[in-house]
Length: 428
Ligand SMILES: Cc1cc2nc3c(=O)[nH]c(=O)nc-3n(C[C@H](O)[C@H](O)[C@H](O)COP(=O)(O)OP(=O)(O)OC[C@H]3O[C@@H](n4cnc5c(N)ncnc54)[C@H](O)[C@@H]3O)c2cc1C
Image (cartoon, rainbow, N blue to C red; front, side):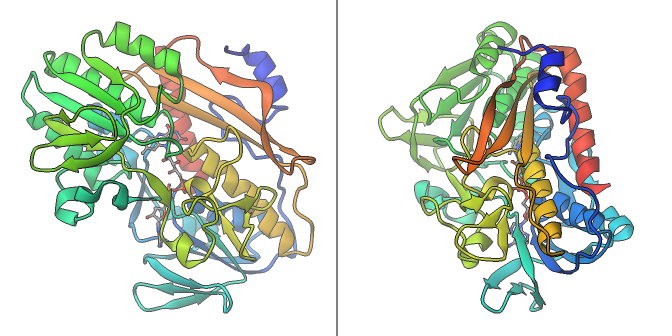
């Protein structure tokens, strides 16, 4: 049920509109904070953390951001590139402001190892950087063992995930353009948890939006490892039935076991094989590999448990983990918005700790995820997450948040504003 806007605003206690990126219950500039922080990963979590550490320490903390990519490329909105209404340039934001305006040291490299005893990060380029505190926001890596035929690089180049925005996003678009009218695009979704719960269903809509205009005899087949749509289910099902009638077919309980790359066929635990013209596989996921080197992978051999007051690893001191890599709290999605909020709670805590003060004892975070149904119309889900001192975790605030009543163009304008706002918040 959607909560009236004024009630939502009241519940969020002045934190957020559904389009604004709020400060998670904290943070003014702290004088006297100093020390060296290394941030690994310049995505939604890491870029935000690097910028806010500099701002909230008034330039007192020396911040180095390690990231191999020359520019930030956003996963949110990347499904529009696959649908064909936007291009990669729309998703791309320069890192330049982080060094220029905020004094972050940007090191274009990949972290290959972390020595948590000596507090040193080792880089692929041969260098080493020491830290007082380390922040990891490496996003996800894929568990290729669960899709053995895709373990090899040449197979991965043919059957794409496009679940890290960049070159694969563009190649998947080209595969769809090359597909004949009357063809089948099949999308395999892993069992939750995975990056961006509504993202696959948004992708199905974007491909269907393209087919409806350019290849109306074609089909979108959703092969979901989960028993049902994991996010905004009623809204997506309505869009498939009414906006994309006869184009989208949803099949639950399709747990992928492998693919036949040459035959473009997906294989499942129980269900029959499915052959497609374009096969798009989202493999099961876990924290980015550097988390393992730092010894912070603690949950199911996949994710990193953290103390939600500081986002410090529960296992390794002075190492904080943000974003998709963490073992989430109840009701918390793996989203860019959430990673941005983790980053702010963590940055405020690190600034406090490096100036001899306690971290905020009662953080509040919020999340909004828009999903584009067409090139203009959108739906959203939002939630507020508050520290519970008895349970010592973040819990969703009952009644704060909800989903859209229906897709609309107005929500589409909010969705584009959300994207521009969060890119500016992290990178401007
Ligand atoms: C198609 C799609 C649509 C989505 N839509 C939305 C949406 O509408 N709203 C929303 O909130 N979220 C959305 N998401 C989810 C969102 O993209 C992620 O939740 C978010 O990117 C997580 O942030 P992160 O910092 O954990 O990881 P990322 O943003 O992926 O950043 C990780 C960074 O770490 C770097 N890195 C990794 N390993 C190393 C290393 N060893 N050394 C140096 N750097 C390293 C990577 O290069 C990368 O830049 C979507 C995702 C997808 C795939």
